[in-house]
Length: 215
Image (cartoon, rainbow, N blue to C red; front, side, top):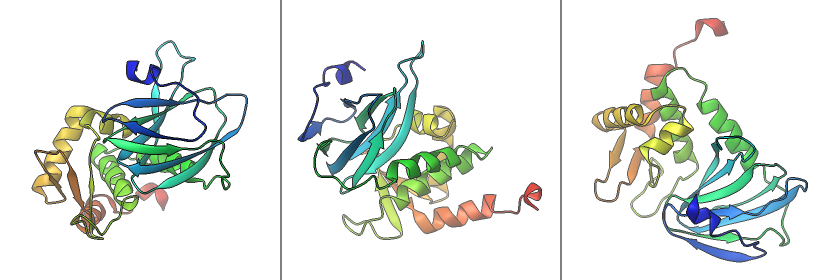
C-alpha cells in the first residue's frame, strides 16, 4: 500500500498515469454522497475498496474496467476507494465536472461478482469470471474477434481472491482450460486469450444440468 499512500492529493480534473501494479486512492468523504467519473484512456484497472475500520484491513474488488470505457458512479461509504493498474494505464478522473447520473455500472459489477462466488465448484466460478471479463471487453481489433478477447494483469492470486479460491487451484484450472483449448496464454506477455464460444459450450456441458432443488 506504500505506493498508494504517496498519491493522495485531491483531484478535480486530472489524467493519472499509473505504472503496472501501482495504486491510487480516490479521495472520498463518507458523509457525502459524491459522484465520480472514471474514463480509462489506456490499460486495465481494478476498482476496489479497503475497510479501514477493521483490525486487519480487507480489500474488496468492485469492478474491472478496460481501456475505452467511461463510467459514472456514486460513493457514500466509509471504506477507502482505490484503483489499481493491472496494466500500465492512463485514467481520466473528474469528480466535479458536468456529469450525467450514475449509470449503475458499479451496482451491476458488484452484483455480478457476488453471483460469481455462489457456485460450489471453483471451476464454474472461474469460468463465470472469465466470461464476465470477456463480455465487458468484446473487441474487433488487434487480432481479437467477437469470438475472442484478451485480458492481462490479473495474477492467479488475484483471480483466486475474486472467486473465493486459492492461487494453486486457479493455476490448475487455467492449465486444464489451456489443454481444452478454452484459453491461450502468451508466455512472454502473460496475456490470456479467451475463446468465448468454446468456454460457453464447456460451461454448459459441465454445469448447465437441471438442479434438483430448483424443481
